[in-house]
Each structure stands twice: as C-alpha cells, then as structure tokens.
Image (cartoon, rainbow, N blue to C red; front, side):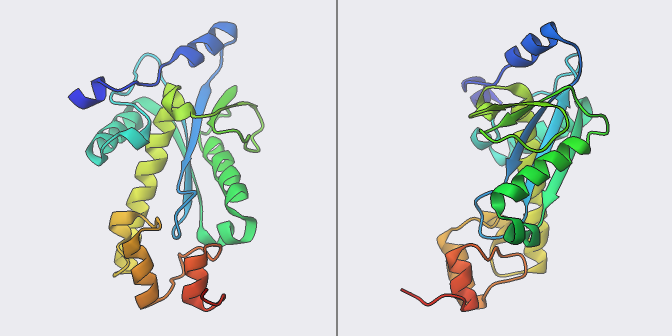
Length: 213
C-alpha cells in the first residue's frame, strides 16, 4: 500500500459536514461498466461506519486489482453494502443511462434501510426516495463514493471472469468486455454472444445488423 499513500485520497469531509447538520445514514453510490461492449452494468451503494472505517479506500480507477480486492474485503466487513445489476437485455431495451440509474436505485434499495442522503458520482440523480446529491468525480473526492466504486468494480470484474468460462475465447477475464483490439478480433472471429450489447457498432457488425464502411 506504499504507492497508495502517495496518491490524493478521498476524504470524509462531506459526510462529516452533512452529519453535523442532521443525523442519519449517508450512502455513497457509484457504478462500473457503462462503456463496455459486453456484460452488465453494476452499481453499488455503501454506508460507512465511522467507527470502523475500511482500509485502502481510493477511487477504484487508481488502484491495482490486488489493492481493490483487499479494499473490497475490508468494506464488506465494516460497512453496509447494496448492489444493483442491470443485465444486457435491460441495457439494450432502456439504454445504458436508464439502466445505470435503475441499477443505482436498486443498490440503494438493497441496503435494507433507506439512507437519509445518497451521494452519487456524476451529474445524474437516480430515482431514489430520499435526498440525493450528485458530485462530479465524486469517487476521487468522497470516501463513501470511492468505497462504492470499489464494490461496483470488483463485483463486475468477478462477474465478467465467471462469464469468460461460459463464453470462452473472447478474453472477458482480461478486458472485462471493454472494446480492446483483442475483443474486436474475437467478435469478428466468433460472432456476438448473448451478453454483447447491441447498441455498439462492432457488435452490430458481428450480427450483420449494419453494413461495413
């Protein structure tokens, strides 16, 4: 964790300020998987216990896989966690933005007890029945959101690793469904699977839904 100590880390400043104004649970909310060509979008909601803070929390994008796994385990031990998963069918039907908002609301509902406030990464408010505040780049600023980013990322990565066994040859265990050259080549060679998102042109090409340029 020595490298992590040198990074700018998210803080509890916002949560503490809100708690000073009014008591009640505060949940951080974030997602993983809006941009891939394949697989679900996963959202997480995390309510931290200020008396048992997990260790190693940072924006999931700046952590190595081993660091994320360790932080994920710590969060599961010390915090209240909810997860929402929108599958490919929902993404293709509702579009990725609406599917993401649904997954975020589902993650909050999975906490069991509705928090007083949710702090959401980004600039869109999910349809939750409590106060919500959006924070652009919140996963780099707010500890609760950073924790949610780790849970969402690790959960989705593990799902994609499992799907790699169901759909071998695509490299899902490595690129996690994102649009890498390896993924493009596999699409051209093997065709699209049931977990590929039909909204992406490389997938449409593999399905013969559009003509090549």
